[in-house]
Image 1 (tube, rainbow over the protein chains, first blue to last red):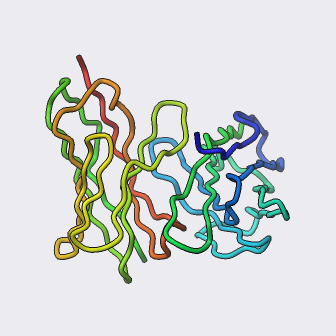
Image 2 (image 1 turned 180 degrees about the vertical axis):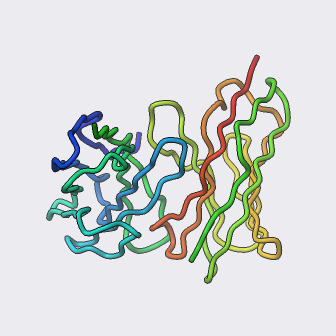
Length: 113
Length: 112
């Protein structure tokens, strides 16, 4: 059991709306990363948070933003939703130092209509 | 930038057959290499990893060897089971374990 939990599990939004996805990291982990997995594709890195600050970002526009809280949980916010934002959003938690495993949550399936 | 290329699927095998899923990578540094597995309706689970050349990662009968000379990390299993049916992702990281760069995934179906 990984201990990484994401909510909600499924979500349907209309184009142009905003969405917030949530992730509770595994106990003791201080780093959270978010990935977007489109249907039939591998996950794509969105960004990573460490000690409440963004610490690396992939090729995603600014309307994708995030937060990390003092308890290391995290949110992913997407503004002005587009149809192509429909995907499985995965959260992974890990320790910043050392070569430890990144544990993934089960993901949030977002559908934009 | 860094990239991972893995063989296209789907791959369909009979139970007890030998499995190979090819994976090659391009990286500027000296990355760590991973295989993740995704069962239907679930997130990703780490299957195995290797952090330096000639390291062999192994788990649940699966193996992969870090080949720096051929920039490859092919996944193998000697005898697959129906329960191995899943999507397998090859990945690399230049920074220990995150962020990860994934291949597109290979869907494996094992039939009894």
